[in-house]
Image (cartoon, rainbow, N blue to C red; front, side):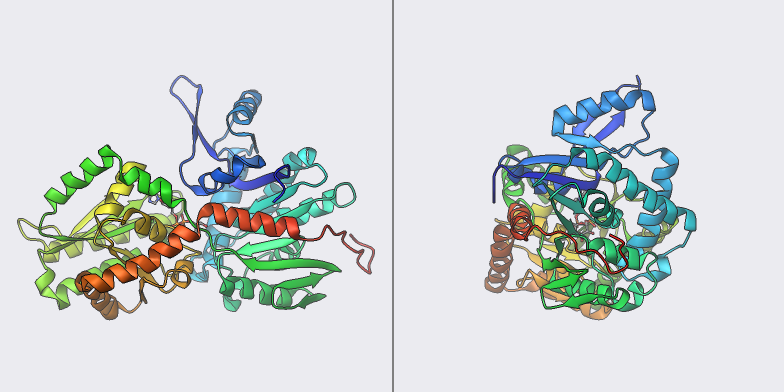
Length: 483
Ligand code: ADQ
């Protein structure tokens, strides 16, 4: 990869979090996790320029100050959106239309034409900020479902003026045919995606579905296994499984602070096995299914009552969306019912935490759990599974992983489950808790090999290498003369 190459990374959110303090001044903090840390290692070698929404409503008079600070601190350009625009675009169209449909859950989707118009408008606003920065030879890397129309808009605006390559990575699954058929804007979305030189998804299934979806709604698409030809342009469609930076987790686990948190917690759970669940409280993560399986374990294998606990961290997410509030209520009622049923004076089976835990505490939880149970009913990849493996170098615990995650295709040592099949999930938990040491270690080592090899740096480098290797091409004019 050419080290002088400039990469414009465009994502819904900036790589830093900005908050307003009591005195009205702003606080800036680099976001932990996410895309910024995935690309951290590469940023030292290549010139990155970020674009993203700061996530707060900023008065016009403060915009210059914030732009200056953000440019200085993380080489980023904030894309300002009014509160009303952001709400219709993000809370509305992104989270209540695109998110459920991309995850094949049309029953959770709501439709509203104002949201749709604002989604288009925000993708145009992103282009307004980006276009003045683009130079010949740039690689533009656009991320995720919030910006599906941006590649097409940029291609139209820059076509004649700049020689650039555009890449797009979708972090969610690409929907199955039935959900795709009701996706609003599907033609516009496919047309935009095919304005890219390279389109990346986590696994081959999603890439295949994207190719079929584009073929279904657009004329003039010609497909071969790894690329498409559209309006005379070649578009590569590849799968690049994202990973994590395992060293940062291992190093944190080995700090004295985390080690003492682990010892303290181990003492309070002495004589009991620990199953861990960590998720944003999102309906894709299958928390009710996990709780039902744990309940069934205690019913069907009563020898575990008093001997096993489930620690469930539910990170608050999208609290302004009704479906998420309903999910929280349902999960908390379910936790109460199960605890009411199986608790004893000296035993509470489920330890439920509705909060975002600090990174050190998260690493301590990962390190002390005997089993990590991931029961997503849909999930693009699922990085919690990788993080658990990275933190388990001493204990070599068991990963119980839903077949509906991208990670299930990557981690051969995991015990794969179907979260809808409650009795078999309960059996799988029992199997995970009783796996003979030699088999457990073998399975763990298989997972660790993948987590250590397919890191986030490798993911970023592979995508950018592939993007840089695509031929620079002009779009041939369409027969109707429209470009
Ligand atoms: P998410 O749906 O957010 O990501 P996931 O991949 O599991 O799901 O990542 C969650 C991240 O949040 C992890 O890095 C984790 O450390 C962090 N996190 C979890 N609990 C936390 C807590 N209590 N406090 C602080 N941080 C916490 C989307 C897609 C996934 C895809 C990723 C990356 O839905 O399928 O794997 O993007 O592409």
